[in-house]
Amino acid sequence: MKIRLDRTMCDGFGICAKHAPEYFSLDDWGYAVLVGDGVIPPSDRDAVMRALLDCPVHAIIETPGTAARADGPSAVTQTTEVSR
Image 1 (spheres, rainbow, N blue to C red):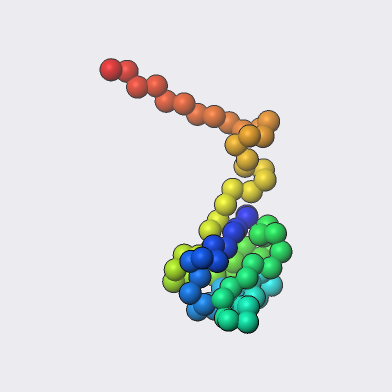
Image 2: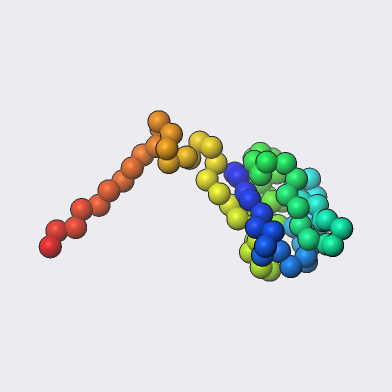
């Protein structure tokens, strides 16, 4: 799992830091700061998902991890043809 934090959306509720303090801290003004690079190991996924789901302004976003990159050699492309 990989996440990012949109600091422009954060309103400083601090719920993320309460649920997952290893991954979120609060700056001097009370706004969230992502700790680390956003890569979440499976053992911490539940706490980070709780922070993501409880964020009232949806400032925490789950992003595709490095294994799911669309430009990688293991990427699978699905196309659908529509006949008219």
